[in-house]
Image 1 (tube, one colour):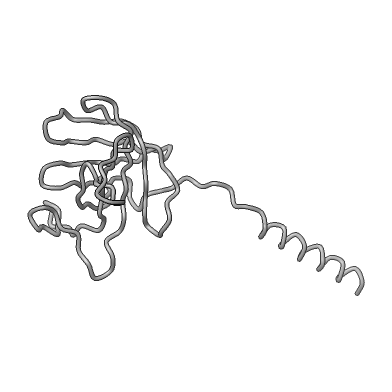
Image 2 (image 1 turned 45 degrees about the vertical axis):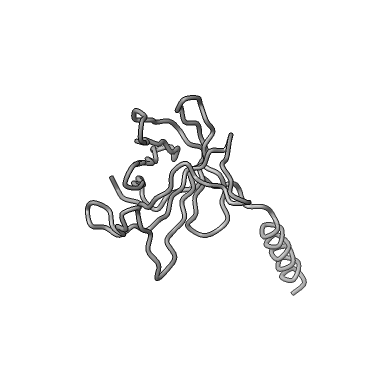
Length: 155
């Protein structure tokens, strides 16, 4: 009986130690390998590679197609994603790409009021791209360079 209580104590102690240890950092993964979004005047495609890195392709007014890598950052809230990287417009600018799921019972609308993509699929995420170097603010609110809607897809 004494050996079993020592073993039980050791097991409980190990379980408490494992529970108290911080979990190893995990790579943030998207619900699907590709995110397509934008608005009536711009489009973005975020693609996840096999190594789970994320790249972007961005089409904006008065600019050629822009592309580059993005680094993932931990974000508060289930289903939210924040990625940071650089974009070469007139100068190289540090940007933040933020994705947030559309709340249950609500819709995301583009500038024309559309709630679905060109394929007829509903937008499930809101997206905004912020300038981290020279943010434009109204009061304490940061105004995005671009904002819109999108969804995750397999292609």
